[in-house]
Image (cartoon, rainbow, N blue to C red; front, side, top):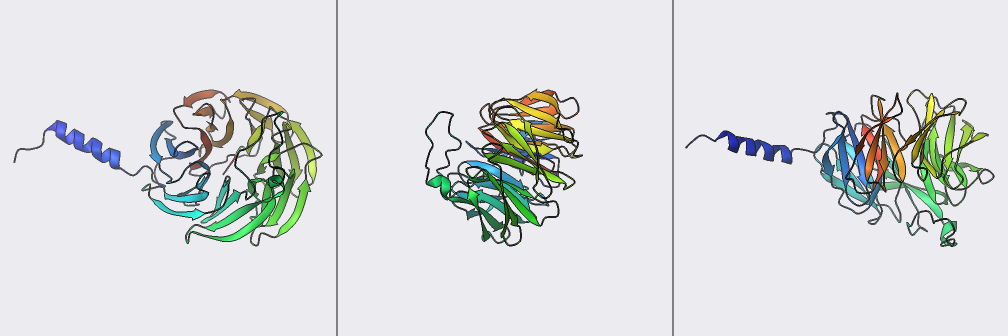
Length: 349
């Protein structure tokens, strides 16, 4: 039998490369981006290019999270009202778990996922200014957090929040689960192990629609964005109000840098990522981004920030030292959320 020609061998190698697993948890540093009109884009953080796609087997992936070992990716899928659990090494969809209407935000702790959903929601999102107030009765229906055992694929606890539960954060000791409730203009503080409500914190005196929430890295307090009032609220570790900070229009995602020295706010309708001193809250910089940029993440080495911009279909890459845009990764399909492996500081993780 004649030997294979170099051209044939090259073709075989290319086919094998195309069939290779999309990502390995113990391989290069990666970013995972949910596309509401598609699947999950996997970005190689060395090349800053999309290297592969993970199918989720459902429609409308939005919130996402990674298990502590990076081997399972969880996505919340709007239209199919479920979550997908995906093996990051093989791309296999391991299981799907029914959640309820409008599953949106995901946080993962160990092999447990905390997924917000809204039984009373049509999933339409915020109304435009000047439009009629929608579904008055639905706005009174409490949001929920489904606590999912990812190993068994079962909802093990249903935590009842307030109307339109949106953001999810943990206290630094892991004892508390803190939720933002948009229609209720409140935070609700729960015992994480049982879901028991410990305290409600009204924020309506300061503005409307609390959405993003993040604990300080040292556990000494929290910051919360008010999407319809263009503010950032600052609380101490006991949820006592400290101050409000003016932001650009429609702030959502919020995160501290890994050192806790700066706080970053995604002001979606202002089309910018804003940077504030985390002690004085003096503004440091407004960084132009794209359209409807809700969520962002630092890279694991903290050298860059990646911002998912849904309406401009791109991820904007920012140098964390110079605070300048260094690249735009385009051709995405309404990106919503972004997390990295190894895990890094960001508006979700």
